Length: 174
Image (tube, rainbow, N blue to C red; front, side):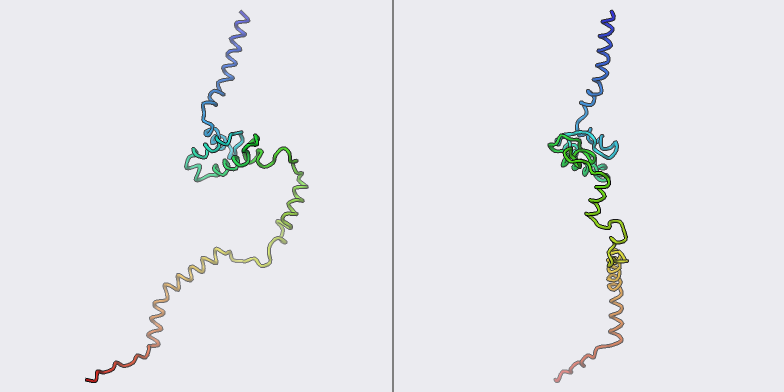
């Protein structure tokens, strides 16, 4: 009797353990990619390139238009093809296992070498504009529109003020 009870308990535990994986296997892989991304805006799982391409094809229009899901899937696709590493921004695409992590001090030194005086007043050019370029372009367009509207009355006024001397019509000599 205890042996039968132990076998029934083992069968029940194995059924419970297998049920989430069966439900997981029934979900298409593209749906798992989209679900993974919607949790935190990142693709944290490991997915095949085929699965990622299917996720791009099946992405809903609202996510496609108003989020970065397509860019994130493409980054996972480019970063993880053939590597077998974790996809996504925190996965294998940015830092592979054969490269050591940089210490904060070394990262700071490399950043200083790449962009000297970044974030300080020395990095601001002396000849910077005080008026933004889009504002200057908008002002030029407004001035052109104002001249186009005001030019016909101004032309008429100049013509009345300075009339052209027209030759008198010649009389027919018949």
